[in-house]
Image 1 (cartoon, rainbow, N blue to C red):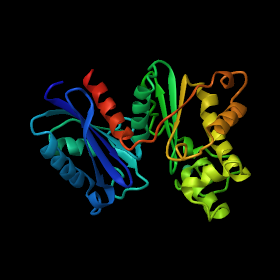
Image 2: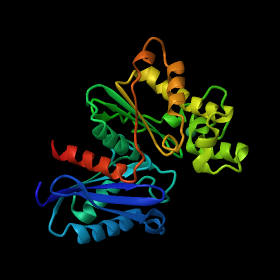
Image 3: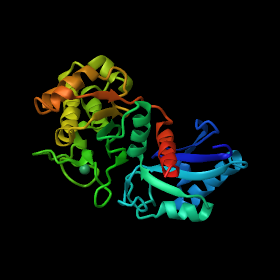
Image 4: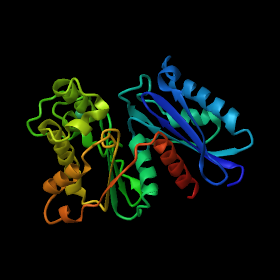
Length: 302
Ligand SMILES: [Zn+2]
């Protein structure tokens, strides 16, 4: 691929991360710009076009960009052309962002859910086979979920398959950010962990929470909640591989052994309980960009 490259972009609530491939298909020219600053006037397509034009001017003057792939923290239509709903960035709902950028830049642009980009990277990093069913459970601020069947993300009729964070818990009454009551995210997410810390451990630094308190019942119950939610999916899909990741799972002292113990408890016996194969994703800033690049390259191979 001399003089050709693909660009991967990971849009988050805080940062937009961008990178491209070099002649050896390695990630280079990784940059971060502030999402708030970029999107402050609400003209998402124009602002992102500007950011990308600057990037292209800086790094791609003598390189042909074959494909751009963008990870979006949102629900997308099943054909991935329209952004349905974004919780953290104003002005994105309803946009046909790929088409608009394509027209502005003259380069093919595709969108995919950000968690699916993370899974593309993890699948590559862990050398997982494309055959069968693979799932990713990413406990960050919310509960992110990727379901891959034969190497491709499951989208569903409307594009919103894999909303593991919004499984209704029987008898649950907590208010979820999505508007419903009692979603799994109200019991097993990073924002729930922050609430627990404030209520039970106001004097403990968030970074030390699991180091100091992982044997407390409150946190053991929290980890059990994560296992319960994940097992809802594991018991339905009997996946070939399971990846856990996200900021909470990667916190110092997070009790992976206890999580696995509880996964075994909640998984159906003898299977899938006896055959669970759990792997962990390292939380690195460029995982989403690297995943987007891998996705972009699969499109060129067709
Ligand atoms: Zn919800």
